[in-house]
Length: 76
Image (cartoon, rainbow, N blue to C red; front, side, top):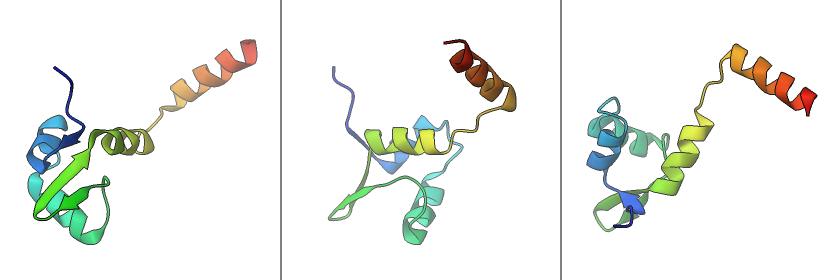
């Protein structure tokens, strides 16, 4: 079965293991922060592609990881 292209707020909360609640997503939508979403009528959907981009944007790289990346690219 093909993975869904859009997730509901409940599914997004599950994706982040409950660390982001449906209420938090609602507040973020009102403030226009957080992941991009699509609203069709009353339905609020989050494109999986937008969630993945949001994940990458919020990724924190440890300094040791950065050093390894620099060393690896210098060796190439």
